[in-house]
Length: 179
Ligand SMILES: [Fe+2]
Image (cartoon, rainbow, N blue to C red):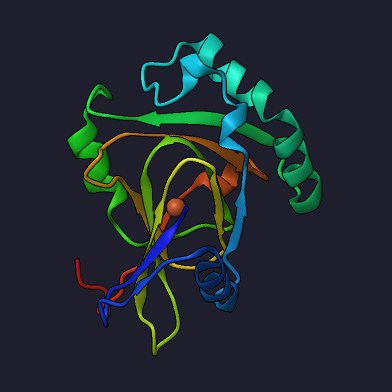
């Protein structure tokens, strides 16, 4: 279940309805997939073979095709990040820069945890959406953000894309963002 930390105020937003209504204000998609569908050998498994990754995609095929039909995604894959990922420190440093994309950025967490740091309005500033398995989120097209790991330092997520060009990150220089 996702939680939100508002960076400017330190406010913590918890509980399904509170999280949903907050994210609605910023047009951030927030849905859930049933984590009990995942076969036991894939639960909290961060060393996935290509076959394992395909098993995850097959497990959630109905959810993926439903989301794709509603929102126009054409390709999807699995991303795994952990301390076993080559150059993880460098990768995280690269990730932790505010940027935008020409399409929305959708992630469905299937293991571990992740954080989307998202720019809200002037009043709210930046907020962190802390995600756990079953959480599905999409940052709107053009909305400044970045993705990173929690202290758990491990995540498995399904990514869905409309066009390959949409993957490109455009740096967003923002004096209002404080790390
Ligand atoms: Fe991004």
